[in-house]
Image (cartoon, rainbow, N blue to C red; front, side):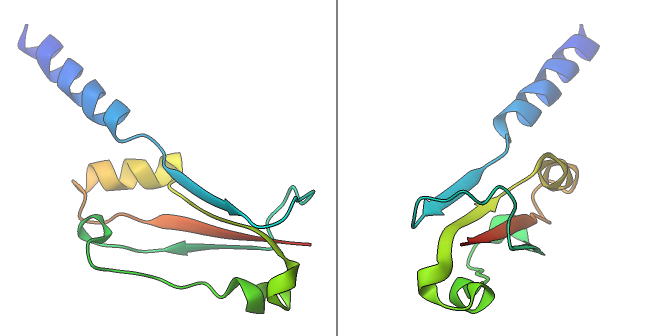
Length: 97
C-alpha cells in the first residue's frame, strides 16, 4: 500500500510540473527552425532572476523578428524535479524572417 501511495504521489508531482511555453508572435511566420536557441540557468524557481535575449540583434533589426519563445523542455522539467526546484533551466528561441 505504501509503494502504491508513493508511486501515486511521484506521478502527481511529475504531471503537475509539465512543460511550460510562452510564445510572442510578432509577425506571421513561415520559419520552422529557430534562428537562435539558448539555454538559461535559473535557481530556486527563477524567483527574482531574469535573463535577456536581444532578438533585434539576433535578427539584424526589430522588423526581422517574427517570433520569440521561452520554454521548459522535458529534460529541463526533469532536472527541476530531480533538484526539487533548486535548478530550473529554460530555453529561449528567436525566429527571424
